[in-house]
Amino acid sequence: MKTTVIFDLDGLLIDSEVISYRLYQDLLNKYGHSFSVEEYAQDYSGKTGVGNMETLIRRYNLPITMEEGLAFAEAREKEYFEKGVDLKPGGGKLLEYLKENSYKVILATSSTRDRALGVLTRNGIRDFFQDMVFGTEVKRGKPNPDIFLKACEKAGEIPENCLVLEDSEAGIQAAHSAKIDVICIPDMKMPGEEFRNMAAKILDSLEDVIPWLERGKAQSGEKGL
Picture: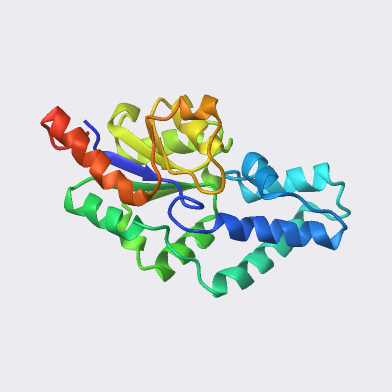
């Protein structure tokens, strides 16, 4: 029986992936480079800021240090975030449903603690989460399973009792490697067939998760999936 739902943050719960793409594009434009939304979705979505900056500097031979790149990204993201970052459709309603039905709710994000808590607080949803795992708490980021295994540990549950909600291929693979059922709600890119086959279900929106959970409860005759 599923007792715990583990949320990704960027692109799944908040509409922030387009902001990440824009700020990386801003950085590349400074040095005469550019990249596509498709490239961002394939190679950067769901990854840590440090890992992404390392990739950008290496791939485009940028004449900056890691610290300079991260400082630029942090400052530019702050400018974008000050204008507001919306929840994805259905996010608030789903969190209310999970609370009312006594699910444990855990955040597992490649983001830093301060960034994640800031955006959750501004959207009034911080208190829906019993615990959180941030990218700095694990040695290996997605697509490795570490962050989701850590989330299970914090929830006090085995992977079999957990469900991951993700938008990216890296997140799907991470959950699959952790042996946790994963529902994918695509954001910027529909996952490839290999990754779709790893997912328990592909849904159009967080709005569709509640009916999916209710169907599972009806089929099992139990409180849970």
